[in-house]
Length: 253
Image (tube, rainbow, N blue to C red; front, side, top):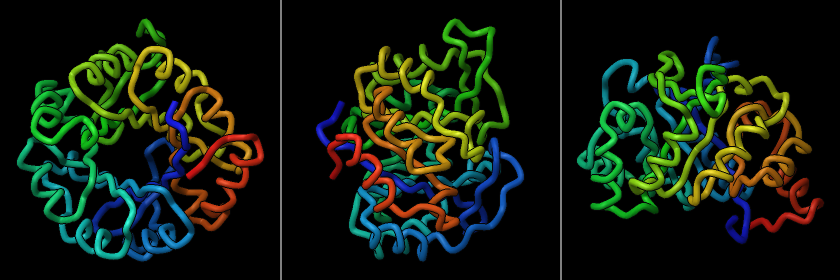
């Protein structure tokens, strides 16, 4: 585990607006991405993750103007995902202010893109984004999906995470579709499996509903915790989460 745990708000963006649903469905408007990014930066977020949730589904590139406007307002690492398919996409995103990129569907379709991005930019730039759901057919009990959770693959989630990290992915963003938006807590079993099988940092995502949900995710092996709806709604601030982590002895930034 890294020495200091990171708290990362996630901005899921569609048509230029932040959206959030439950189990990746019934998305509702949550506000302006630039305004929310600035709010979280001022609250003390360690990083921001920006996911264009409709880019892959619609077969287009990420909205660069929104990325640039966000990067001009916040001065912490910004990870951008959605519609990233090539090293040229990474170059373009970096030119618009992204520090790291998240890749999901494109990597599953063509795993060599992981090697290509890592070779050119370094593993520290590449975050493998995993949208995972439970599936008893898989050896680990979990399967990866693509296209914003809309398409289920026949690929075991843990085996894929291990392969991707060996190819050069520098971090794993492990998002539980089953827990997403439920506010019932992170999928601790999934986080622990990823920690046991992969050597790179793990970001836990999906299910946070209260401050007390965050320490168990770190206890299961996560190096960072990511959440969306609890921050967008104002139910929790970044400070609330950091206080909860600190109270259990977790070192935070």
